[in-house]
Image (cartoon, rainbow, N blue to C red; front, side):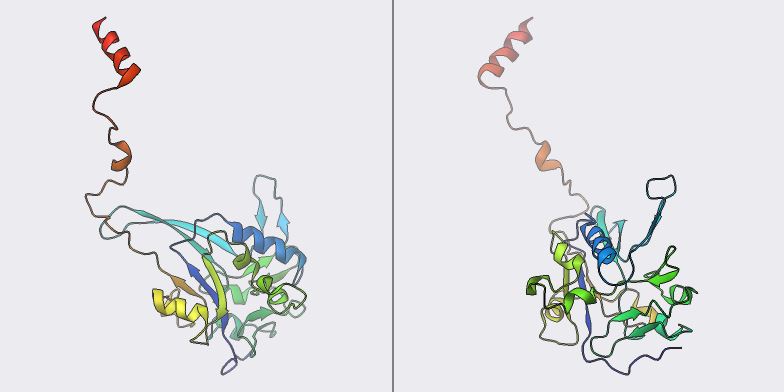
Length: 249
């Protein structure tokens, strides 16, 4: 079994804004593409064009319809990947030590050469963030793109996870959540960032920013009403003449 570090020097992670995520899946495609050519072995697909396609993805987007206590239902897109927990059960349950949490930045990784594909880490993860790559026979997970964020050959703006760099809505943010002065920490403080399933006691590093309340959305509000109001009581000009003429027939 692998022991977790008592503390980490940094806590690198993601802050995801559920208010601005549009569910376009650009982050999913970018993650799949980068990890097919970067860190670790490619993420395999099985029968991708067939009737029952399967594939390994490190990041997925789920969509839900949420009904507030008052007002109309809201459609919320919920991206999910490894949350790089401080108290990561996937690490402590691993029988070979393949899963581990780095002291220098808090990123949880898998040493693929040591992984035997037993799946215990997937059972232990309460978030369903690990996937067994059927072709490689090992567990796969989000790495926060360790081969990007420390790569000095890349322009500085590209030294962020592929999902963050790609998001067209800028709903994904990356940084050190151990630093209260970092942009991500200040964003969490300002917007009331929350943990996913805090009752599990895993202390996830990644945070979610909840959707903002929609101003003026009450029980009697019809969001389509402004678009359905008539623009004129009576037809004017040629259309008015045509309407009057046809009315006499």
